[in-house]
Length: 374
Image (cartoon, rainbow, N blue to C red; front, side, top):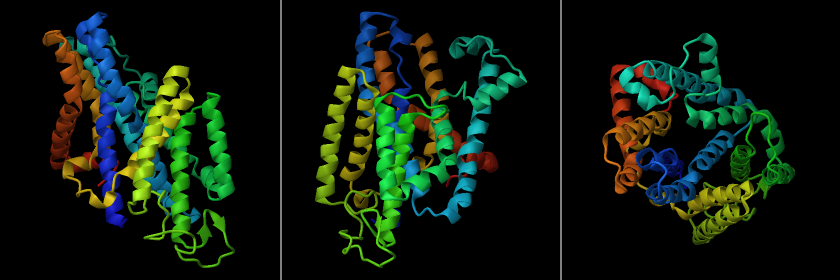
C-alpha cells in the first residue's frame, strides 16, 4: 500500500466512524413516545444499530490515533509530535468545551430555547467555567479527546514498553487483566489504553519491519535484512500489519475476526462482562481494516476530510434536532426511528455548511476549531 493509499484509507475509516458515532448519540424513542410499548420497540431497533454496529467507532478512533502517533516514531520526534497534538488536541479541546459552556449558559436563559436545553439555568461563574472546560461537563463526547490527551502525554512510558516484543506481550497481558478484572484506573480508561496501545504496538512493528533490522519484533544485532528474509511479502510487510497491501489471507482473516467479534458481543451480553465488548470492538475494527482493500478506495471527497469538526459539532446538532422535533412533530411510531436513521446525514450536512462558512469568513478561527487539520 502506498502512502497516499494509506492516508486515503485512514480518511475513509475516520469518516465512516464519524457517521457511526452520531447514531450512538441519536437515541430519541423516549422523547417522542414516552415510556410505552411503542417506545420499547423503537428503542430496541435504535440500540441494535447504535450498540451492535456503531460502538466500534470510538475504539476505531483510538486505534487510528495510536497507530499514527507511533508510526515512524523515535525519541527525537517526541517533542515534534507533542507540539502537533497540542494544536490538534489540547487547543480545540479547551476551545470547544468553552464554546459549549457558553452555548448552554446562553441557551438556558432564552425562553424559547430553555426547554430544548433542558438543564435549567446554567451558572455563569469562573469556577463553573473552569470545571466545564477541564471536565467537558457540557460537551460529553469529548471524553474521548480527554482520554487521548492523557494517552499522548504517556508517550515516553508507552514507547519504552512497546518498542520491544517482550514489552508488547507484557502490555497485552496487563491491559487484558485490567479489562477482565474491570480495574478502575485514575483518570484513564483501561479499554482506551487497550485500543490505543495495541494499535501503537502495530505502528512500532511496522516501523521495525521497514527498517529491515528486525524479524517479528526481535533485534538481530543490527544485521540488515530484507522483507523476504524476515518473512514479509509484497512491500516487505506481513499481511497483519495495517500498511501491508490487501491479500486473500488478510481479507479472510478480517472476515473471520468480524465473525468472532459478533460472538464476543453476544458473550458480553450474556455475561454482562466488559471484556467481551472490548474484545468485540478490537476485533471488529482490526477485521474491518483487513477486509477492506485500501488500494481500491476512491479518493475521499472534500466533505469527508473534516471529521474532527463533524465530531465536535454533531452532539449539539443531534440534541437540538431531536428535542425540537419532539416538540413539533407527531409522536408516531415511525417518526423517531426515521429521524434516528437520517440523523448522521443531517448532522453531516449542517457541519459541512457551517464549516464552509467559517473557512470563508474566519479562516483563523476555523483552523483553531478544526485543530489545524488539513
